[in-house]
Figure 1 (tube, one colour):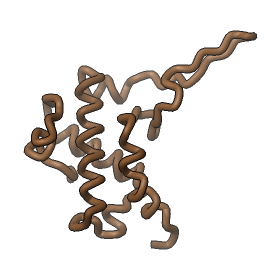
Figure 2: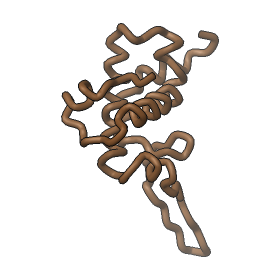
Figure 3: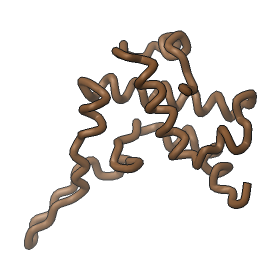
Figure 4: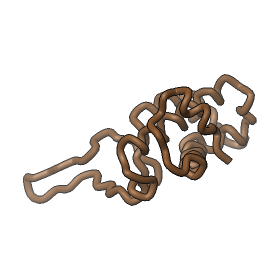
Amino acid sequence: MAYIDKTYYESLGGTEVDNFTSVANRVSLLIDTVTFRAVERFKLQDTKMFDLVKQACAMQIDFIASNFSSVSEWEADEQMQSESMGNYSYTLDKGRATVNGLKLAPSVVGILAPVIALGRKVGC
């Protein structure tokens, strides 16, 4: 189930998205991975921390819509991090956060920092 709906996304001025529900569901699963399922494990739906999760979802959806022609293109995007040969070295997207090879919007990890910290708690 998606953490945000189209009305919330549009209220933030996000780029138009085809198949919004499908994209929102995929992004919510990605956010679950980044936060170690903190929303579910700590029942964050009715807390201020959930606002951070919703904002991160909206940013990630907008990032995908603004930089890729489809979710499939985003998922298939080559994740070459670096290439070296002799004295030659090239790095692509230096510092760009990824999760399971999927590029994250630049601000997502920063916004989610408190939720990620909570999600890292062991034994909860």
